[in-house]
Image (cartoon, rainbow, N blue to C red; front, top):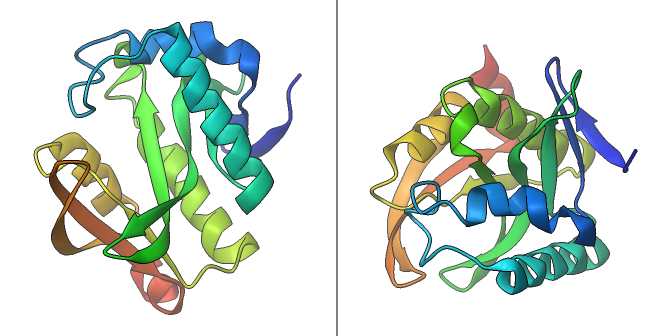
Length: 176
């Protein structure tokens, strides 16, 4: 079993590996799941995504993690904490992307909540953001459900992006 980083009631979030290309292709080859990305990804582009993730593990101690059903081990998606540049400042972002066959089951919210707690408590981050496409309402709802607030709209990745954030010093208030 690969290195499990976080667990929730239903999920394990484990480190991504080079042999995860076929799993990630369940998302990356699906034009509906990839609607808010520039395009679908082939196997080579998926390997480049994995290499980027492995560099994040090395340089930041975090990155995107593979999300699996805690009981069955079934691949569900990916979720984690990644560095992003937002208007010239380095921010840590909670990112999530799940296989379409499991949408609507609350997995993104559950995984993102675990990542938020990990970032604020274990990593002692002062702030965490989420950067959904301005038209990606389901992704924005996940950010809202985990206690993030819409801070602003920016232009990034050649499109309008929402900047949701949560701060460590307001976290206790948010959770009441």
